Amino acid sequence: MKIRSVRTLLTLALLICSFRPGAAGLQDGNRTFQQTVDRLREAGLSSEGAFDLLRRIASVGPRLTGSPGAAAAVELSLRLMAELGFVNVHAEPVEVGHWVRGEVAEAEVTASGTRAAVPLAVCALGGSVGTPDRGLTAPVVEVLALDELGRLGPNLKGKIVFFNRPMDRRLAEPFSAYGGAADQRVNGASAAARYGAVGVLVRSLTLREDRNPHTGLMQYDSGVPRIPAAAVSTLDAEVLSALLKKERDLSVSLRMNCRDMGRVTSANVIGELTGTDLPDEVILVGGHLDSWDLGVGAHDDAAGCAASLEALRLIKAVGLRPRRTIRVVLFMDEEFGGTGGRAYVRAPQRKSERHLVAAESDRGGFVPVGLAVGGRDSKVLEKITAYGSLFKPLGVSFIVPGGGGVDVAPLVEQGAEPAAVMINSQAYFDVHHSALDVVSSVHPRELELQAVILAALVYILAQEGI
Ligand SMILES: [Zn+2]
Image (cartoon, rainbow, N blue to C red; front, side, top):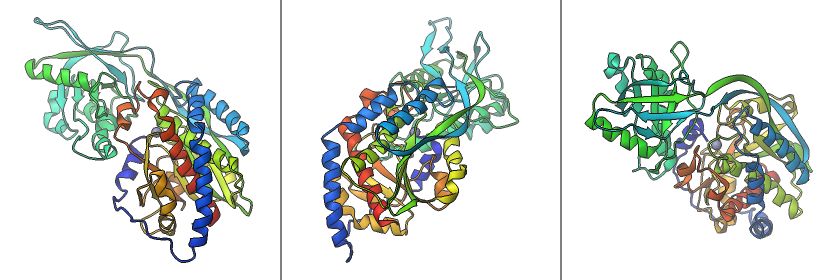
């Protein structure tokens, strides 16, 4: 998940809707759905279906947009959906960028008269240019905010700017803390290059203090020199900051051989359970197939893909036949530009379809705690809130307006209602975009609960509409 989806989340009001007893007329429906939800829960929690799917997706390794891993994930997903018995299984083309990290990402505080060189754990930020082959060495200036750059002005010429504002630990919601610090990563390089800086180091976006650098997308402004941008681990950011307090004229050398490889054709992968009565009305559920490449993108976002696939598998396994179409879309390129979400709405097949709800799962595979559905005054929010008692035993303690994300944003712009299972995100940024985002960091039952909740949500929506 990246910054644009964080912004969506930040706008999500923290209004907790209390569960109202079902309105008159929903009682019968509630009883029927109670049995349905019980069956989905029993089928889901008695297996590790979602975790097994996650393991298979992660088995192809990192799935960086445009990479051979991403292409392998497309092929695997087509096979998985066919195996699971979904219908209309197909891939739709998406033109994407192809950036490679390369083999080298090294940095060190250069030796001084009184001490040896100090290595720094760094990684290239996604989209960064590399350094010259022999690396670059320059004095370092530490800043905590982009708006400090203007004040420093000419002093930044020829320097490496070190952005070291931590995520705000005082905030209860880590996504808010992430959103409040991500400008350094996304826009820091071009902001510094305007003043003649030659490179940037950005403190990793995590609340955890360790030596794992966290990557993520950075963007260059046009008309400004493109300078190398690296993330530095939080512990090494602390080391560098402490050294700078003692030594004013400290230099860092940085060497990276990441590079852009042009554009390639990739794909979104799509399958569905076609509606029995209203097949052209679509309830969409999905996540993104691409990932960052330091780990295997287990939480971000094999978890969302697996939970979405498992939701449809469960609906089918307990013998339900939805009135409207329930479709799973595994989007390509959420992390590197969101081209998959835009290609999906532009595909010619969309002309005859109407998407009622688009549920995006891209908040990790941690334990679910709530649901975000629709706009503040939307009918769909009212409807799902009325069914709150069905979700409460699954751990859903609040239902709020919201949902959405990068992949479904184009659908939401066209009128689809967003939705998402909200998870406890306290540990999400420990692993997010780092080498720690691996299969063993996902708990099978936590992920399965997400799939069961998704299955119940999309099935009710497919039966009831919005
Ligand atoms: Zn993601």
